[in-house]
Length: 239
Image 1 (cartoon, rainbow, N blue to C red):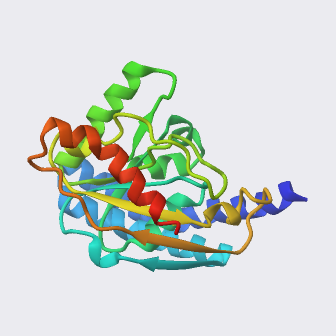
Image 2: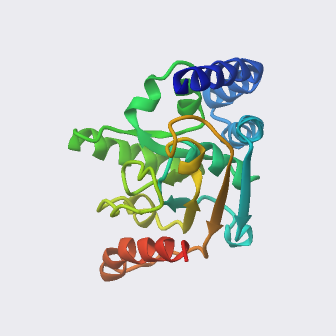
């Protein structure tokens, strides 16, 4: 029964992606032309359409707070990771700013969905390949320098519940190396939309955006202490 429920939802998702292919064509056109401003704007239009449709279809009640804490310009969002739903929830919760994701490489292989994740300027990590991971981080830094914001989940995998895992070391180098703000985010409830029972179902999700942390001018000691500081802020968001 779970398989059938999920299959119907996946088919609907695939068919919906076909209706917004015109955004994808424009994204690729602007990328080829090197027009990053138009590319970011078109990515955001596609993200808005896709996220709104998914959230509505799944009947997710999204409760967002702290939007005023998002600074202008390029940022690195840092969040806990509960569910496959974290990506569409992020896109639905934060408006007006383009961002891609630091994601596991398996997502890039998914039919249609993988193409979209690539086109919104995401970075793919090979967990078992240290050299490939370093190359991915450098690619992410180049994206950020070009003005494309990113989201990273430093736990490295879904917790599939309300408990957070430990953050992986080195995950915040993306921000500290070029001195852009870090915006911590606490997500709670996305696992109830799928992982809790193994099929897509309605859920209430809390999305808390914390105050940005400036990394420009940080010394080595401050940068070394930053991951623990950000992790603590995100954990406190559950209270």
